Length: 288
Length: 313
Image 1 (cartoon, rainbow over the protein chains, first blue to last red):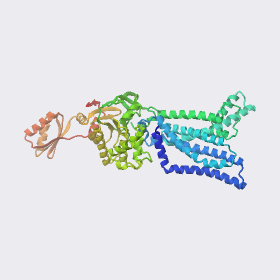
Image 2 (cartoon, each protein chain N blue to C red):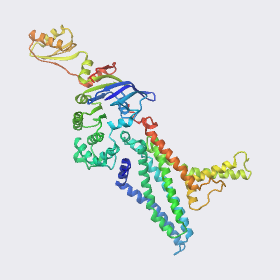
Image 3 (cartoon, chains in turn brown, cyan):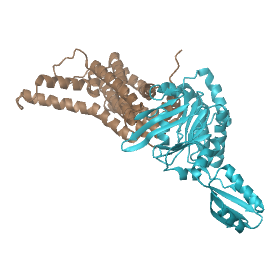
Image 4 (cartoon, one colour):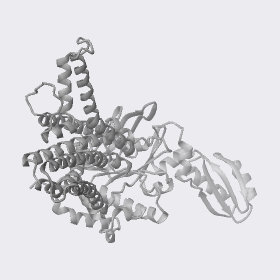
């Protein structure tokens, strides 16, 4: 039987041994739970004894977006220190003189951090079941949302690990990881809306058509909304995105998954290279 | 066992190693001495496969540290100057983790951890969290960690740094024990007298270059030039000082009470002849000894001078 990677085992052991983990889990559930139950209470108060399916659907969407926002905070925070933290504790060099490869170290760190986040998401399932109980949501949509979360956790995790490998200090790495996550979550969405508005303006004759190629602009808008987490989440939940008329031959979530799985693997590969002797940040043994 | 051959390493405009060459024989405890910035840590990091040299080659047991880095990692144990702590791991778990990282089979790890903890005198700390150990204990645990895969070569960067005298003595004892186990130990330190005690040979570095290398006694002999001698007599010390000043190889004589100090530039036969002359001259000599210079004084004397390889490998 294949043995579990020692770094992964150590990380899991360390993570789940500390009381901080339980507190973080409790806090996460408290935030989401308060949100769901608070919304339900307010809805019931308006019309006692009745909770309509359309409200349940709204609640589900809001719950899913809230969870996405929380993931945007939690995942980079957990992963942005995995390598720089080893560097700051001065344990990285020791780890690199073992038989473990940089790739094994990077993957183990990512998997252990993501495993905890998956636990956080899984722990919210009972809250989803409360919403699900009142109808308005298809089981496929619930599964789709959780699949989407897995891809998003992987993406944000890869960004955090890459920043952690590149930057020497955890503080800088964390800020950069949050910045990149925000750029992906909000920046691509804003850009998609902005370019869509330009295209609309061109169509109405507000801008000379020669300035921007409408077909190309539509293609960019479609791509941007397909790689934007909020737009893709809305698509999974059956909401309409920006009407571009462009069809990639794949649903938005498939484009999202393919693009970010590839980007994540490339980021991890780059991170592992940074740990090799001669990698950019291997100069930290500069005591001379 | 270890060979540096013309290693150069730059960090930007700083030249950390400048055509550094050194050979270290199997089973030796070898000391690397130098001031801050001399290049000791860089040399050790290159040997530990953590840094790439800009030029030159380095080998461990014939294996190139760049081309065969993975094999090299299998035969070296590296102990940096600072013991990094993993929170929430017990001493045995810490050792078992590194044993797993060196691909030691799972069934061997618990026994190995126990054996190593006994070797470094920490058997009663097996279930203690690593971050709660004292600095000396952490250093010993780090040494045990270096040994999990039974390496042929140990690279120890300032292992006694920050330790109290008792912990330093314990560390020295363990290093002596490692020598008995036929390990080759490369050790750097600023505490030069201690290196002189435990090292078979030393190399003195400065500004990335090798200044002098060889046995401690040989380096001391070569570096001293004229040796400082002391003669104790029952009486007539002033008269003896006058006599000695006329002898070949003797200079800077100084009588102080019942003893005379002077510098003597000569070999052991000439030293014996000098003693014979004093006794024949009727001076009641009760003691005739060389005032030995410690490694620290030697280090201060030789840094900045040319390379002298005294061999001995």
